Amino acid sequence: MELRTLMVRAVETSTGVVQGIGPEMLDRPTPCPEYDVRALLGHLSAWMTERARAAAVKRPITGAPDESFVPEPGWADRYAEAARAAAVAWSEPAAWEGTGSLSGAMEMPAEMIGGLVFSEFLLHGWDLAAATGQKYALDDHLAVALFDQVSSMAGMARQYGAFGPEVPVPASAPLADRALGLAGRDPAWTPGPAAADGS
Image (tube, rainbow, N blue to C red):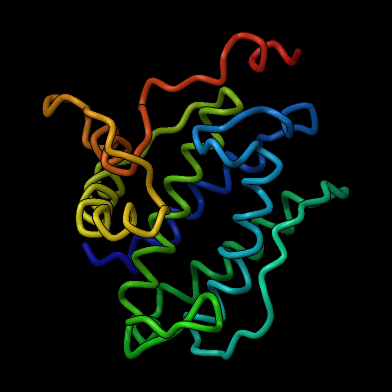
């Protein structure tokens, strides 16, 4: 299946986790060492909502992304609405044509940006689910697409520091777990007992 036909499903899977995050969870660690939950939500909000949508519709982006995050009332619903708008934009065939930019500084093939957006939603959705103790299950189509996408970009992503070193995962493991390993994540990662009990 084409990634564009899976984008809405990927975003719904990810935003379901975001909407399950309570204020008491914001300081928990995540599988991304440089981010706690609050910082990862700021990262997603900065890059995967309006900027992702702008890249899909080929609208110029200016200024640096603001990754600060303030959990004001209704923030999760506003994030979900913006993420869904980005997903709808990336569901259009024209979004995948030509070039575009998420940063406003570097043009890339639109297909590369769309693949990055797809992977970011699913991988960071898993990061947040693992950090906050939520279940996270990808259907077969999403798992195959994520594995294929991560496989194609892992080398470059590691080169630029977006992925950590590959985590060995058995070939018999579920495809989603193998994708996580390629993306530098341990599928068995947990935040530890102190974070899990809120202390």
